[in-house]
Image (cartoon, rainbow, N blue to C red; front, side, top):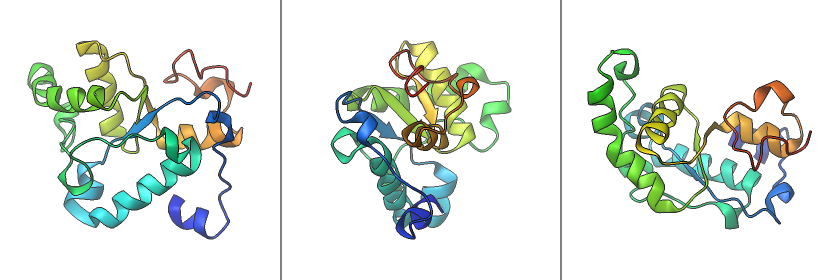
Length: 161
């Protein structure tokens, strides 16, 4: 819907905030949304939205990506299953995939992906913050409240306050 709203002029975009900062972002392709249902067209829309708010030059894609991207290991109820060691084991590949991009941030449009990847970053020392897509949209447009910055790193935590 975000891509549609941008194209219809209903959702304003702004990537100027990142022109000088040049903070690099990558994006997680959620399994349920991309691989198991809507496929590459929704993955393309996801990239269109992200680039609209961080700047095309500040987006780094994972490899593989879109329908071929790796699962983060937290979906299908696994995040809540209690099998923390197994979940982290299966998520190692995703963690390394994110690190390999060199991006400072990972954007996760799915709540399960966000929680899993956040845990992976902390557990494996990835040192990359994981943010919700809506957080970046709000940050870029100056709508992000002071109490909505929990997952931002120190480089963005006070931006626009």
